[in-house]
Image (cartoon, rainbow, N blue to C red; front, side, top):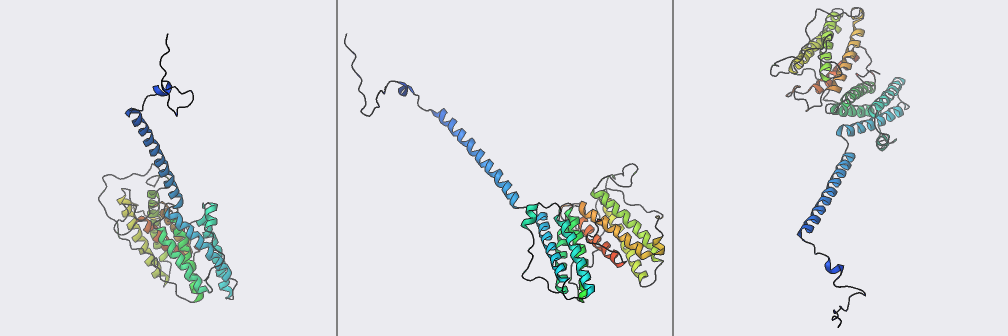
Length: 374
């Protein structure tokens, strides 16, 4: 028997290679395998792009805080710095009465700084901490009141667009800083810089709109349209407050002599006008307006000491409008509130300032945070 002829072996073949073995039997990649690989490649690419987009979005959010937070950080920094300046000026060569005023200003600014910084993360507070020195710190009381007035103007402007409760904080701090600037201007014998917020706007046009097909009824046993801290409840409380104020001024005005009598009569008309606007706003929101009543039970101080009583009443109204500033939508986001001439937020900020200023006129003390009780 003869042996089969041997197969030629390539020169570069490794030792022991078998051309007819496993390597020879391995199938070539076909179109199905190619498509399968392409599919997995596309899936992996999509996951990478998706994860990269999510991470990028989160990083962008972390790098760009909401505008209200940016305004709050800047206000906190400015107010803290102003407190440092007021404290330093109180030790300078100024009259004793002005020293006391500057010391109180520094104390109030510290309280305002605490309110603005409440809730700020420690890292944020450290990152925005004010410098202890400045190239051009106010060296006189007149310069200090200018700095305070500028800060108040910024805060009141931002209160119109701030989100949620910061609308109240900005309005309260801005109002009080404006009064601090007024007091320092009087002490320095200078004129307060002009402000678009002074005098406080009161003559908002009466809002009008289509009649509602139905009215939201108050909850049984209550006088509020709905329970809880809502813009509707705050609006109703403001209308009730103006109704009471109108009656209280009718009683107190008759106990006054000129020039207080004429001033009180003017304020009575202002409160009556405010009630008309608020009732129209309630109607626009399909809520029942505040109906006239025969009278209110008033403290005897409204007849015995009308100025003191009216100061307290205006302080209560300031608190009501501060609540309305916190609950009302920022300017431009409330389609039902005075779309052509302003918003409910603008009303609340303006009338918070007006009530606090009237409280001060009657001899009341507004405090570091106008409209916010400690």
